[in-house]
Image 1: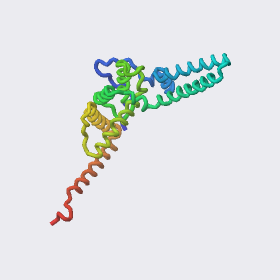
Image 2: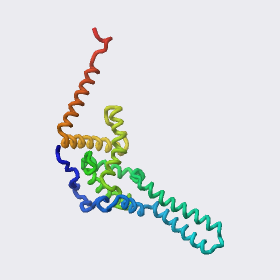
Image 3: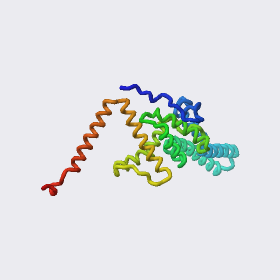
Length: 239
């Protein structure tokens, strides 16, 4: 088996401004620390934290005054509610789909162009360079509040499989061809999908040449058998 060199850093694109940028997985010792750091930079955290501080302060004030029991009870209730909201928003924001939903059309096109240009394969490490590019792009363009949108390349790979591959694979299986839907992003999706399939085939062919050849031969035999069955004359057509 060929040695996997996919974890080596790939070359940056010409005029790339992210040459010295590192991924969050190299900045943070633990993934949960990364999640906390991301959360404290989000508007949701600022709102919830502000409410917690406000109602905590009001609770302390009315506890000291001792003449407003109903108001004190309300402040305690809203303090607990805002604290619960703070923790709930942290859990929601930690879910990868919540963050990816913040991407706009321009950002999605950028990822697809990166896939076409960088040609990543089935190894998540080969997506790290795209994660670097996207983190810098989203931050510099003001689409995100930190340069740490993707923790590593696996996040980009997950988005590509969920948003692009799943739908186009279904179309290919149903129609046996790929066509864009005529939207602004459609043409990029089709090309990126084709490029990725080619690089994945090449990746597995390099890693497991014997096994990959066996897979290709098996598929060719099955296709040839199906073709013969389709071309065989029906009983009613026989003379």
